[in-house]
Image 1 (cartoon, rainbow, N blue to C red):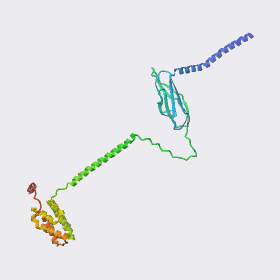
Image 2: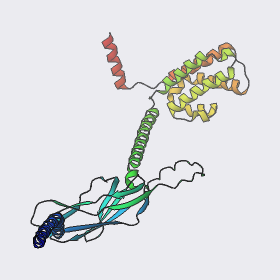
Image 3: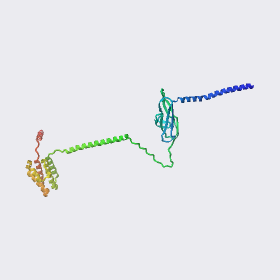
Length: 338
């Protein structure tokens, strides 16, 4: 019985030992498989990236510079960060190489405060000889972002105005173009006005060639219409009528009659044959005018009218002869009218 019990116990122990070993192998198999896969994956990973930040505490608005360094375990190419505009809750500001080796600077920014995790940064690459695009990741990082310090007892201040950016040459281009247009318009207007002024001066300088006798006869008619002596302005009347005759002599005979005395004028006119028919009226004309202007002589109304008649007679007696061509044209025109 004892032997039987012992042998039975021995079988139980034997069976128990086998079952325990089987159970140990069953429980240990998943962990062993995971360890083998991890070891194989670690050996097969051709790239490893490490990310770090310094410091790990920031304020809202600060730039967070993440330094990334890579290690190559195999022949790979086309390595580049696969980032968009954001990385988790962070905005990507810039991504640039920071050295000749596998080193990058990833600059981030955030508007959230508190403790936050920077997600792993992806990098794409290809193994030489293989066109498959692969991805490797950096480690994740934890940073602390604090808010701006607020003094509850401080005074309220206005928002600071935006900083003025430095001026560049392209900023001045519109103003330079506007200045050139204004200067060109001003120069054009100045030249236009100058040309118009020259034209006006030329037109003003060109006076119609009125014959001396016509000019004198017109002036005598205007003087007659003024009726100066009828208004008691006797001296003015004689001054104007003698000035008209003196101007006529200047233009007709080219003498400075306005600056000569009456006697000097008669001396200059005496050798001219055209003055002989009116020599006596001309002497009486100047004598009467001189007595009124210088001797306070008061002529009768008939003398005033006679003075004007003498002036008409002097001018008409000295009308120059009409040119032959003009006379023939006038006679032809008269014949056509008939």
